[in-house]
Image (cartoon, rainbow, N blue to C red):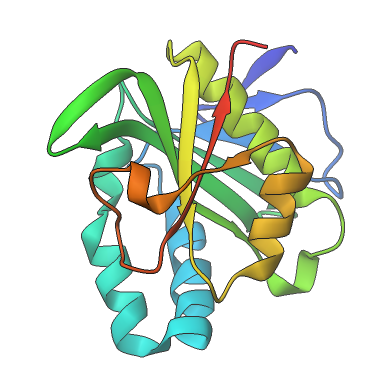
Length: 181
């Protein structure tokens, strides 16, 4: 897939102004705020204000900094409508060099059912491979059944939470995928 530079970010493919642009940006790009604002609203609706604030504080945007992390944004007419982020997976504070963790996967409620989540996941996988990762791990919550369905549909394997040393939350649902194939 061809990459071009767009405002300091990498964009995949060519896009007209009225189409979705997939951008790969650094954690400190001002457009990341659109993703964070959307996530805060989404998490507040699903988990309450305290749960949303705790989740965003647990993984500050600096967790996705280069050279081991990246943020993917889907932009439509200058607005961020979907996105996600890659960071090194850490188990007990130790990074696992081959494993990326995907966080902050989100699609605006006004833009769902258009394949954006699939595009975001494909872009996250591509970014992770480009960063040298061979495996992806992610966690979702029980209040996000559509995320569970998506991950299963696109080939992620549900893991037994008991097989992991730690979970972000007691009720987290872990998924993994080999990125080599």
